[in-house]
Length: 192
Image 1 (tube, rainbow, N blue to C red):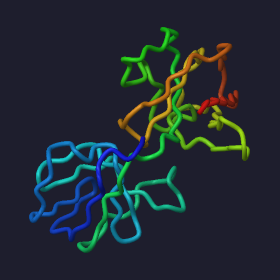
Image 2 (image 1 turned 180 degrees about the vertical axis):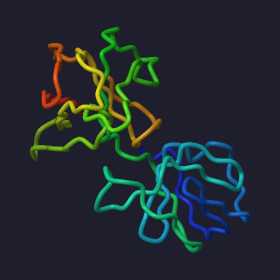
Image 3 (image 1 turned 45 degrees about the vertical axis):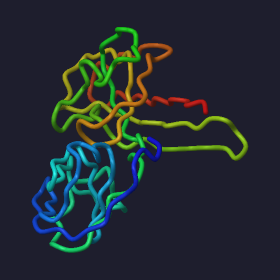
């Protein structure tokens, strides 16, 4: 999440829905995993990289990070930002196993396509002078979700799919969603 290595600028020689290539680059494998690459009017969270290619989870538009994937960018200048992408994507699970420092994924993450309980952008809030901030996710079950489900734990990630999970928290109380329209709001407080 912090500044682990310096950023990088260059000119792309190829792009696709999930890649950016720079044949003139000589990156260390996966040195930029978790970083953000910005090109044109879109950005992507880097899932992995080779010496000359970045693989991103998808292309995002800054105005709608939780929306559909943006169009594939054209060739041109790009920048890889130093540090990591903020972890504001919140996911839910029915798995009640206690969080562990070694966890890198959210076991049993609810990921039903079209469901209302899938990973989404959480709302960030911070009060000046406070040594904490909150992330709040609001979920409403729909007809695509597998119900009933008892939500027991949440995780925050730095991308819409895959990505790094710096936060995993057992809910203070489980919540059972039984029917389409049932709603759940989860607030995670991060102490600094």
